[in-house]
Length: 165
Length: 443
Image (tube, rainbow over all chains, first blue to last red; front, top):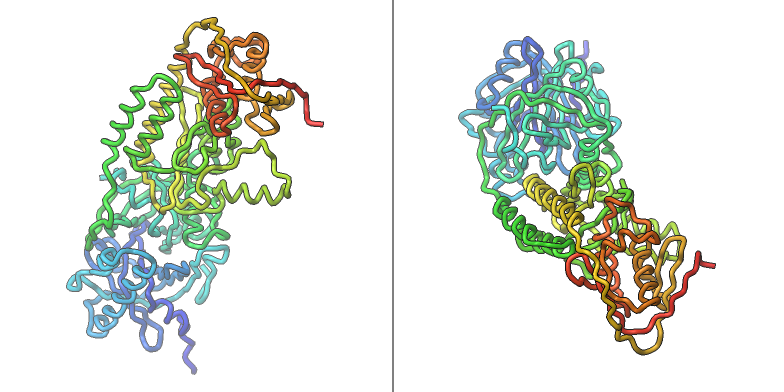
């Protein structure tokens, strides 16, 4: 039986690996949402798993919520053209950074800082935005189930892949 | 900690914010926000532009989390918030609409962003998130010392002319704001006309704005300060004027005074001058730089505008008795033809437009009396009581009208000038004989 094609297209994978801002959400047992910023990501070669890097400090509630409820929503936004996608998924796994994660983190850091300075932010501001404490970083990997368009406009919210919302 | 006054720099729209919500079925959602507006120390408003997942979620489950970023220090703060209600009109809505317009053109989204409502949220908790900080590229000057100095300037004034000059001096020297104007409201509060300005090639005295027209008109109608931090065509007077000139064709109306301000302001701030339930006028400030005015400027300058309103109201109750002094006027040379049109009280000197409306009627009345008995000194009180002018008993803004008239005559370097002759008194200065002609309307 042929395997189902990956939910994440090559173009989408390329987009989320670019110089994008990343944020993650989950929720508690009482449906109180939790929110944290991410810093770079990695996509498995078969595009069936996404790994987002984030600092533990400040993300405690989100990490507790994904561990308890196995649900995550992640947005990837490209400033400038203001394009964005949101990917929702499950089968969440939290782990320390591996060598492959560390290898992906550094180019992202550089690209994101360059993006910010190209948009007119001062260099020092851009540097502050990408100076995550690496020993506090975690890798949150998940299986994407749904992809939504989030570029502002009437088409925002349209399902790009996976079941509709 | 659940107050947000200290986070106001995060609400300027310079960096998109984030919001997490949760559907009734427990599915989380995370999205970008183009605008988080500071409402007060315990409330924020988010722009409702499209009926999206975030909005559907908060209507079902009002809890949300927001992360805002400080554009100067890169600091992030997380706010736990609860959705309260949506406003679709009124001061907050107009405020957000104007600011969103700036943010939209800044991000190339002018065709996309359209405010449908201001969603108001109560702030439950505020948490500073760990992370590196950057030194602000520029430090804003402290506003309280500037306000104190400015306030002292106003407190030293005795008349409207002095007050407005002191205000413009204060803006320039205490707040380093070099482009601005003061528009006063007419008695009905339906129109505003420029009486004083600073930083422009032309004074623009007499430039008029209707209630609701552009940033000044909206600030006047809603009686709330409006601040836009980026350039936006939607609120540009120069562009509106160009557009209406094109629509009207070549025949420009001589009686319309052009907008004296910047063609392409990148920051705009309009502050209503409010006293009791009365709108005295609007202070309009602008700059060629983005993000020039912040929340602290708005606060400090609104305090100053309130002081100005109190001072203006005080002056109206404080007027001298008339003195009947007839002084001969030294007028020589060829006579200047003064034409007055009854239908709009516009006055032309040798065919050159000077003024219209109440100020035009006042000028005509002064010149008529001069024509009858050569009198050149008048009191505000007699004008106020003059049945030929029919001014309302209260709230006539006569001082502002006279100031406008004085500025227009000075701008035109007319053969007739008006000057102060002590408190509540004015004097005509003429250097040419006049030939008065009244016409009801143009042929």
